[in-house]
Amino acid sequence: MIEVEKKFILSADDMARLTEGAEFLGEKKFVDVYYDNADHALGKKDWWVRCRAGRFELKMAMVSYKERSMGHYEEIESEDAIKRELNIASERPLREILPSFGYRPFATIGTTRKKYKSEAFAIDIDSADFGYEVAEIELMVNTKSEMEAANRKIIAFAESRGLKIELVRGKVMEYLRRNDPEHMKALEVAWGVAL
Ligand code: V4E
Image 1 (tube, rainbow, N blue to C red):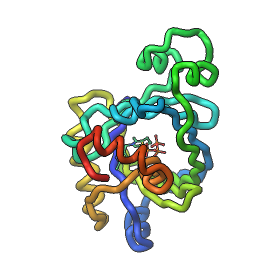
Image 2: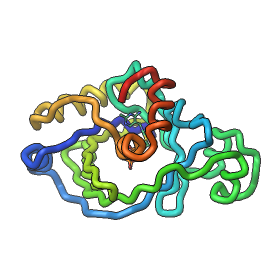
Image 3: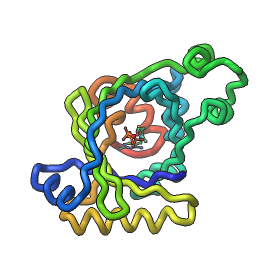
């Protein structure tokens, strides 16, 4: 599946308008541990390896940062597929093998997430443990050809709820901005943008 998503910083009024009539699906808490090597090689490609609740996931950008108006990521959740993408030839679990390939944790972020559904849209309202709140509107699609239409639908939906369309840092980028400016700078240089 391909995730098409857009992030928003919400005022209390925005929050009320966005969730009006939406179905509340519940709240969950999880901790993400993000991995990269000393050169930030994954982040420079806008790839993200994380362990969430003990399971590894890889998110890979499908459109370069400069060209896109919102996030388009492919998500891989099988350890074997993640190893193939990272060129790791080993039968051992990722948790054990990642350090020997130079990949180490660079951020550990706890999140409390409230989930809503409104029409076809999944809405996540995240509160991160370092004091950052961000909302995400998402659609899942099966093929690349559906991505642009999904992109437009998210923007139309957000605008219909009175939300501003602007660049919003995700939790990891905000964490790096606050805690590891060198890492943040390396990504900005690689992507050719100021975040
Ligand atoms: C995609 C990404 C990163 C990985 C974390 O993704 P994010 O969607 O922020 O996390 P979360 O917890 O909402 O994941 P979900 O549960 O939806 O799978 S870290 C940085 N990015 C991309 C990114 C970017 N390229 N630029 C900016 C300004 N923010 C984020």
